[in-house]
Image (cartoon, rainbow, N blue to C red; front, side):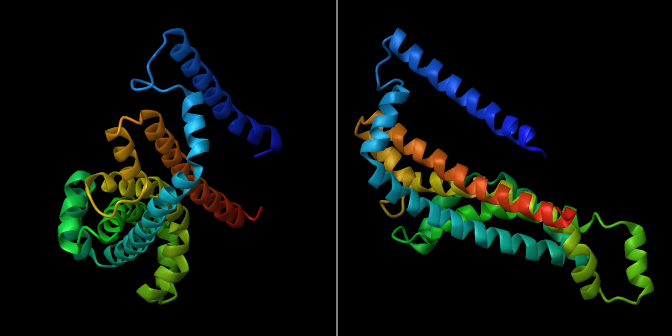
Length: 255
């Protein structure tokens, strides 16, 4: 991708975002919309600046839970996918379980984990994020492991390679792009899941609790400032994993 193409890739969404914010501000001012309905972008920016320290503290709490959940979900998803690819009976057993995990709502998991591990611990929030990450990591990794060409599999068999050697030399390296795609998807899910889990109890810190507390106290502009913090946190997670994916792709292509 050349410099001009890269610039257009980044400038287009930035320009759209600036246009949307300008339109939002203009409509709020033109129609005299009250802050408790829809705060203005300038008001949210002011609240964000004034409460930057508190927002950063809450973002670090939520981000840590999301990061731990991302790590647990990613490692377990990759490991289970490798095992399922090697053992056909395990793959068949996991199909309904993974399908069930994919549709379990976070609002149902969070209270259960709080009851299991205690409302004063962060464990419940981390496990909620891990469950959300596990599904895309498992599915993407399993899909990647099955992308090896039949001729390459035949070649490994002709060399009398063991299953462990086939996995290590052929299947796992070929699945790396799919793993990184799953990680990129899972990074956003980890932040969203950790954030939503905070709405249903647990320690009184994190962006989710800050949003609900501010809204309950009718500080809607402050609540939106915390929402902005959550958006930026999600963007950081997504940006880091997307950069990792891009770096790995360049390494594989020799550029």
